[in-house]
Amino acid sequence: MPKRIWLALLFLAALRAAAANYPAPVEGDFVLPDFKFRSGPIMPALRIHFRTLGRPQRDGQGVVRNAVLILHGTTGSGAQFLRPEFAGELFGAGQPLDAARFFLILPDGIGHGQSGRPSDGLHAGFPQYGYLDMVEAEYQLLKQGLGVNHARLIMGTSMGGMHTWLWGERHPDFMDALMPLASLPTEIAGRNRVWRRLISDAIRHDPAWQGGAYNTQPPSLRTAAEMLFFMSSNPVLRQREAPTLARADAGLDAFVAAVLKTGDANDFLYALEASSDYDPGPNLEKIQVPLVAVNSADDLINPPELGILEREIRRVPHGRAVVLPLSDQTRGHGTHTLAALWKDQLEALLKETAH
Image 1 (cartoon, helix red, strand yellow):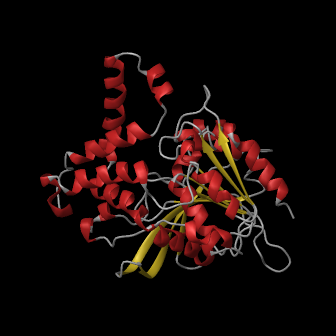
Image 2 (cartoon, one colour; image 1 turned 180 degrees about the vertical axis):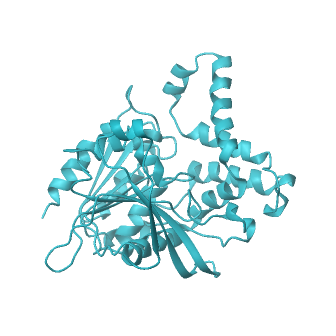
C-alpha cells in the first residue's frame, strides 16, 4: 500500500462479529494531496475514509480482477452497507459478493461519513463540491490509495447509483460491469430537484444558519430531516406503520431526533447541492460495459411513471433496466438497500461478465 495510507483494524462488536457470515472490515483514510475542486479551490489534504473486506487478486499482468466498489447515498456512508439486509445477503460465504472471493471497497464520499466535510471545522469555507468531484476522489482512492487498477464491478445506491452512471462514462475501460440502484440517468429536475431545493432554501434562509458559521445547529436541520423522512418510503408502508395521527407523529419524531443527534446543517446543505452538476444524459453511449439499472415502482424520488429510465437505457449499448414492482417487501426509495429483492439481478450480471 502507498505510504499515504494509514490502516487501522476496527473489529465489530464481539456478538455481531460472531454472528456475521463475512470478515470484519478494515478501515482507513487516504489523503489526497492538493485536490482541485471543479469549483476552483485546491485543498492541500482531502481525507477520504474507506472500509475494505477481502483482498485484491491480480492476474499475470498485474491487473486487479476482483475489486468491487460500492457507493452510498446522500448523507449516508459506506458503513450503511454493513447492515444485515445488505452485507448479510451479499458478503457471506457462497453469496454473490463473497468477501473471500472479492475485494470489497466501501468509501465515504466527500462531505460524508468520516471523509473531509464542512463540519470538520471549515463550515461554509469548505469548497463547494459536486458529483464529478466525488467520482474523481473515488477514482484516486482506488488507483493511488488502494492500488486498484481495475474493478470487477461498480455499484451504488441513490447518489451512489448516480455516481455509477458517471463512472461508466468517465472511466469506461476501468470496470467489467455496472449496477446503479435507485437512480435515473438524467440531470436532477422536476420533483427530485424541488425537494432538494426545499432543504437548501430552508437552511440558507434560516437566520440561525448565520452564513454557515453557527455554533449550534439551526432549526432548519429539523426541516431537512423531515424532508428526508418524507421522501424515503412509500405511502402504503407509511400508512401501515402509522395508521393513526399519534403513531405518524411518533415515527417522524423518532427519525428526526436521531438525525439531530449527529447531523450537521452545512453537511446536509453541501450534500444536497452536490447533485447540481449531475447529468449523465449526453454521454450514455460512452458506457461500454454491461449495465443493469434497478429501481423500484414505489420510489418517490425516481418514480417509474416518468419513463426516463426505460427511455434512456436504450442508449446504453449493453444496458438493461429492471423496475421492481410494489410489494409488501419494497420500501420505496430505501428498497435499494434490501439486497434480497434484487440480488438475483446482481448474480445474473456477474455471471454475464465472468471471464
